[in-house]
Amino acid sequence: MDRIFSGVQPTGNLHLGNYLGAIRNWVRLQNDYECIFCVVDMHAITLWQDPKELSAHIREVAAAFIAAGIDPEKHILFNQSQVPGHAQLAWVFNCVARMGWLNRMTQFKEKAGKHRENASVGLFAYPNLMAADILLYKATHVPVGEDQKQHLELTRDIAQKFNHDFGAEVFPEVEPLIFDTAARVMSLRDGTKKMSKSDTSDMTRINMTDDADTIVRKIRKAKTDPEPLPATFDGLENRPEAANLMGIYAGLSDKTIDEVCAQYGGAQFSTFKQELADLAVSVLDPIQSRMRELMADPSQIDSILRRGAERARTVADPILKEVYDIVGFVRP
Image 1 (tube, rainbow, N blue to C red):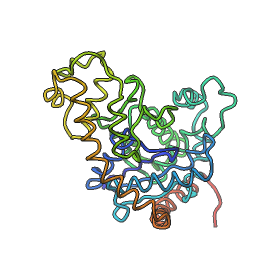
Image 2 (cartoon, one colour; image 1 turned 90 degrees about the vertical axis):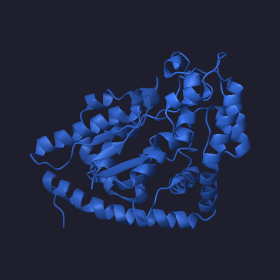
Image 3 (cartoon, one colour; image 1 turned 120 degrees about the vertical axis):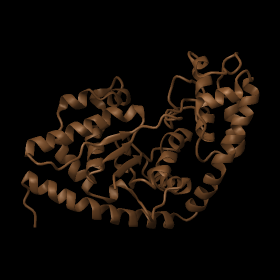
Image 4 (cartoon, one colour; image 1 turned 60 degrees about the vertical axis):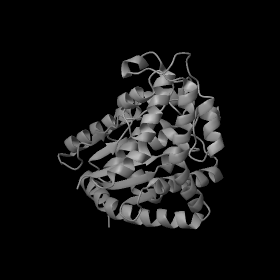
């Protein structure tokens, strides 16, 4: 069976974009793939994190995975820092990847901004660790959003160069899995910007921990335009806020954008927003209830992550040994 690896950073509240763009799709992949799901806490510290908040966020992300339907018994769920092989293989890849490759990474440029000289080495070398995350398990497929395609292409480059340099077919060429419906959920206040947990305004996103009243309020206040909703997909051109809200409805209802346009074409935003809010609450409420149950017992989450890490090491250790032997390291 093909193997999937995917992960989420524990850097603040998970939001609707994380759920529709990633976690929900992972749940659906569980029947067709061997899945390894990771809370990538080592990636999180490429930017400074408060240690107490980081611990809480690791458990919150794990709880969200399980509440959304990830089965930690059938598949592997763990946090990255519990498996040393991620850092060990990342160092090998630091010596395989080229500086020029990393200099072209757009996410580094965006996160470092105008102060690139003050950015951490970890932030710069982040893609090498991401490659190690995937290749440590010889994953064959990775669910990615459009903004992660460049990093996956670098993973393929690193795998190819390692195989070529050492004359051994060790790593597979990883294939992306890209989901079209609601794959890129945008800000509620600006339909041209991606919904982000790092945005300073909480009104730009629906957090997975928001209660029903908060969800309704945020959707009611979401930015719109003065025109009625279009009856066709083509009518969404140059209407980013309408496209975003209708895309969210499509994702939550498992409908296509065309179907949502046909259903609400000609309607006013006030009517549509109320129905979108009702839908969002109905979908998220059972997930949130289960999250609260799990978060009330952190030891249960820690136990799940610990068992997952043990299973992850069982897969990763022989692959890391193979890499070390090929590189020429002397080991007991």
